[in-house]
Amino acid sequence: MVLKIYNTQTRQKETFTTLEPGKVKMYCCGVTVYDYCHLGHARSYTTWDVVRRYLEWSGYEVNYVQNFTDIDDKILNRAKEHDSTMEEVSQRFIDAYFEDLRRLNVRDANAYPRVTDHIQEIHQLIDTLTATGHAYAVDGDVYYSVGHFPDYGKLSRRQLEDLQMGASGRVAVADPETLKKKNPADFALWKAAKPGEPAWDSPWGPGRPGWHIECSAMVRQLLGETIDIHGGGGDLVFPHHENEIAQSEAASGKTLARYWMHNGMVTVGGEKMSKSLGNFTTIRELLDRPVDPMVVRLFILQGHYRKPLDFTDEAIASANNGWETLKDGLLFAQQYGAPLGWSDDSSPGKYDTTEDALQRFRVAMDDDFNTPGGLAVLFELAKELRRQGNLLAHEGKTDTQSDRIYAIWKTLVELAGVFGLEAVTQAQPPAATQGISDAEIEDLVKQRQSARKAKNYAEGDRIRDQLQASGVTLIDRPGGETLWRR
Image (cartoon, rainbow, N blue to C red):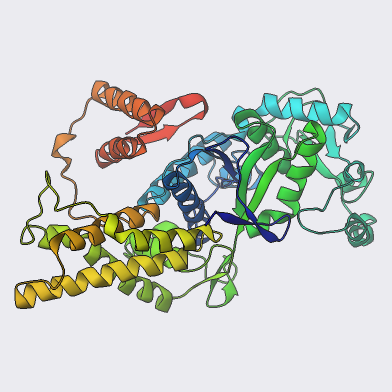
């Protein structure tokens, strides 16, 4: 069995091969940091977290990049509302992003580039596009000329003629910026500065980037001209990802991404989740009810990533019941290990006797990351452990050899780890890090950086969690720099 991924561009499952053997370049569009993350974000970034975990479990080295859009009209409006600055609003909600997603056990990306850190790369890309005739400047604005890219629409399957016809009826009453365009479907690469808004100098005058050019520039800078996987929500297929392709491929003459992956949307009782309908739920609101973060992960993974996911109280209750079953299995060794003769420094035998379960798990996940199929294997293992625990509790013995039970438990723990499902046995005592000094924090940050360079991500995550328990938040920046704040 080989991994097959559904490619949005070709509308079919394709055998996964990488540009470089054993290595995966993966980019996913991040959040615009003007508000708290909602369940749609939870669904998206849990999905890409599991894709990354499975690729690494399968032996790949994954370089995963996810951006932050930290300049946008919504951010500027929020800053005005609170008499704040764009930088303060962005940092506030970047910090909130890490708080929320780490509670869901979503691992940190290898890099989190910010748009404001890549203005020069954006200038360079726009300059290339204007030089080749794919873009044009008008009164301080720069627009991409979609008519100069013959493949425009190949991702979304939209015809340029239809886009032109759809826009033609609006041009006569459009704002002056729209009237500057040579074609109604053209889109902004650079926007001229407006009074009272942040702006950067550029060859076309002061201004700021358009939305779509941001990801093209950051992908190019951090991962190269062609990557293996580009992911994002289904709502980004058009226009964002379509425009990314047009910009990047016109500039490089190369394919931007070999595989385009998109997750389905979250609905609430069958309706689109939105603030206007009053059914909008943030991650922290849900977790603070409280709902166990692992229940949320399980709820997300119970549906295939490409399908819509309906959020209801009943669905969360069902996921909670399912998590109780899995948690019991994951904690089996803690409860029954001693009676079965297990110890930390010795095990009753190898666990290759569960190769059948591992194989069925691989078959499911190799079929376009079929997490419901993978979960079925986990539940089968957990239910068998529950049965053996009941026998041991009520009859004083099991009907299966200890080494076989150990194999089942170890396999469950391993496969649950691929899904980021972890059972916490008890709260970690903060005594070891209470009153931690700045020097101690810096030392732990250096240890974590060394662990991540050595690809010992488990140790890196452990150090991060240790610091977080002491009230220290880590912020990873491009280039390997890590900032921290109490």
